[in-house]
Amino acid sequence: MRTLVNSLRLIAVIAVVAAIVGQWLVSSKLDSYNPWNFFGYFTIQSNIIIAVAFAVTLVAAARRKRGDLGVSLFRGAATVYIATTGIVYNTLLTNVDVSASVPWSNDLLHKIIPAYAVLDWLLFSDRSKLLLRHVWWFLVYPAVWTVVVLVRGATDGWVPYPFLDPDLGYGVVALYCVGVAVSIVLLGVLVIGMSRLRLVTV
Image 1 (cartoon, rainbow, N blue to C red):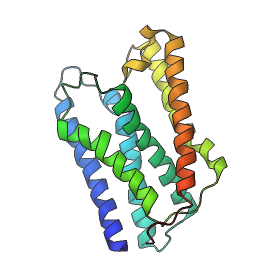
Image 2: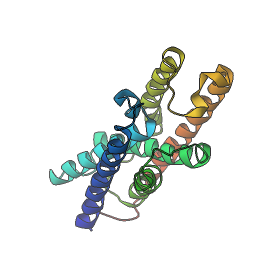
Image 3: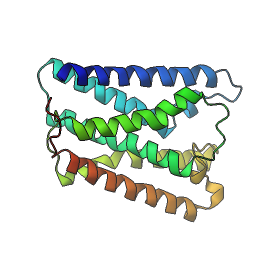
């Protein structure tokens, strides 16, 4: 079972790298391409984070440090972020024009990897039991990302997603941000609850 789980995680890491590179090869050829914008998307960053989390988990397993609290906290946070990507994309961004996107890459980054990451966290037992207070750590990265995006939107005009566009009015944007923040907290609580389950022992 351990070999299967490690293989699935390695495949997930490779899939994320392939999807990001595949999208980058197309985006980098556009006249409007800007590397700060490309890597500024929460989608790209959250997929990189979950790939790194899986890679760190694989290294910990190789060193026989499965279930290390630090590794589990990192993977738990990464699971929250990638789940947020899946939920936001499939609820708020389904009608957004993505004509420049690579279909298979788009599906991997927004659907398949988020779904797999949640199942991986839910099913496999090689993680520590997280505490409710850990949920506040999950908010640090999204908060920093949001501040950076809002500052950029107010200065150079770039926003990664329509619901963060200052032209909507900062009141509307604030409501969206609060909504996403609440969903992250709820996902964090769910992830913490899942950490106490031991459905498949590895």
